[in-house]
Length: 329
Image (cartoon, rainbow, N blue to C red; front, side, top):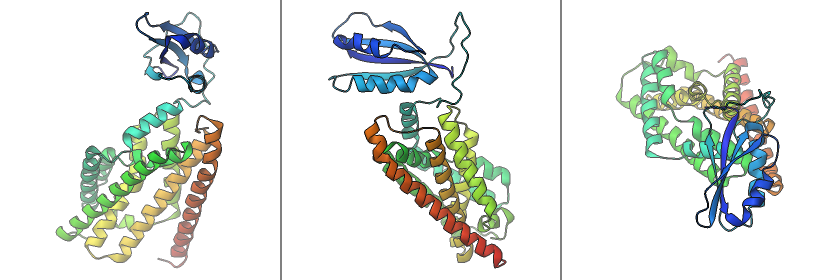
């Protein structure tokens, strides 16, 4: 897939075709064609460079705001061959447009049967991996763990002021984590195993390195998404910070190891707060924001609130970790 160009198709009434073409006259945008004269609607297609897409989409939506019926579709371009070699100077730009980010994340942030099935499988595999002290099995569980989508959904929802996405993502995240804990608890009651197994006991040990790793995971996830280079490895990195601690909480509870369960809960809380904080900061630095100035103004306070809560929670958790370290636990 070409990372430098995409097609933007605009379906509008024939009366506003000239307005659409006029709005699109800018560097990085080439008129690709207008559909044949049939009916009252026309499809105007533009070949656009990445660094021109977001501005074009914003201006088109502004221009068509009062138009009765219109649609915009975005399609990938496999390759572009040109006579002249244009210099790529858009590295600092967001590779994915706001609309693409929202569409991509919304698809992966819902509470669906597939999501619940993948959470169940990954929690079972992760729990067996920790019980058997098998790191390979634990990593395998992370490959299929679907926790990254809902987590990024809640962060993106705050950045864009999409309350529906926030609610949807938080519901999916909470349900997924609760399901992993419940599965771990059931396994803790049914299966005989030693809670001192290194891979399992490690989830009851929290240090400052966990904060650093979770911050890195959140930043990597948000950065890869906005750069248009989302990778399954980033999903694994985030899942490692969430799924094993959640399953471990259940395993400890099933064995009535309450103190170890609390420590695993502390690790999970640290990872959630750190991933959310760093992800939100990356979206902010990368300029992920609503289209209109009115909505941009409306999300400033929620973003500040989100950053403050995440930062304060992470600070409190860091103090708890420091206390444990100083007390020699």
